[in-house]
Amino acid sequence: MREANLTLIQTFFIVARDGSYSAAARKLGMSYQSAANHVRRLEQLLAERLVVSEQGAKTVSLTPRGRSLYKLLLPELDTVLTRLDRTLQKERPVLRVGLPQAIFFYLMPPILARFRELFPQVEIIAFERDTALPEMIRDGSLDLCITERYFGDPNVPQHLVCTYRPALVFPREWGAPPPGDIRSWVRGRPFVTYEPGQLLRNLATDYLRPGEDEMEIAISTSGSSSVKRCVEAGLGYAIIPAWCIDGTETTVTAVDLPELPEIPIYFGEASFLARNPYVVALRQLCAGLIPAGGVKRATADPGIADPR
Image (cartoon, one colour):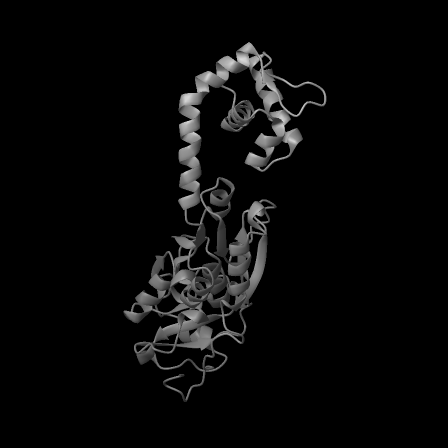
């Protein structure tokens, strides 16, 4: 009996209570054959017949063991199922989303505002992280994710929703770098970047490093918001997503880096939610995560002290 799961017990209970496989199937939203198979599986686990169904009969009868089990379950299971049914009817739909803090902070508010207009009854729970996302979806802790990482996992199908380019951000008081000579301009200046293993750190160090020498890094931190904050405090320069610069900054400025490749952002979900209407709607909205054309940024020019 310890091997029997709640699904099998619930199906047997409703068959016994309502007197037929067809009634139980309608109640549980399954086929007649599935309801019968659940009862047969429970009988196999108990090694005893529970239900007798005559050929062509619309109703079933219980064996003595079946009646005993039904009466054993009756006072408790009926109450539990009633409470579960009421709980599920009252439950608000929820979407649990895993994504980096910077994407949530800089890009998601307008997307969520539009989603809330469409589905005000749906609660969004955001897990601001960028690691272990596929594992969390597979174990049921998350429903979907938005990330720069591509997993290649068939259980977590991903869809490219947009791309962006990185930008060089630095204290405004430094002035602008000369065109075509950013590497020389940053040499000797403190570099702020991400923790080891992150994509933008790897791209930045490959782009900026002099020859085969290792980059000298002043500060490493976890996300774009923290990196930008360090630059705002005058602690160095960084390469961060262009969408982190919104034009309201007073202490830092930025220039585009067209030499660097565009970086993709993927929307992924648990495979069984691929057609869920809330997931589909949010995925479609995320196609506008970054405005068409991205964020306009000034190009490096030696005569421009304020590239904006």
